[in-house]
Length: 175
Image (cartoon, rainbow, N blue to C red; front, side, top):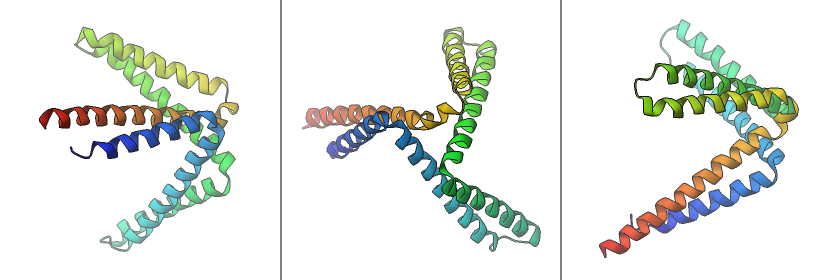
């Protein structure tokens, strides 16, 4: 790719945004909650409108009800952001716990012994993280989503910068 500079800029923006989110995890958590709320509103509206294109009344009614439910969830998240933070953090902790349990079960069933310890460690870490969130709930809801966002943005930024520099070096080598 000749335009490695675009990846470098995107990586730098992501890295800076991640550091800013890490400096103010409460604001980042509220941002995540509001983005989730608007996403649910948008998906709910699209689902309601797409219901009118479905064949048969059974499918239309199901899609209308599903769209209305998703729309109401989004409106509720937007109307009550602090309650939404609690709900989203609880849901995230539950998902992390379930994923950790499945990884741990998979670690005992995997046929490749060299990956067993990595899968087991990953499962144990996920379970420990979920337990940490639950142990400090609801106070943890104020920062958990923001910290997750910060970690993701920083990780994304570092990887984009690494890819851009690798592509720059490949471009320089081919010239």
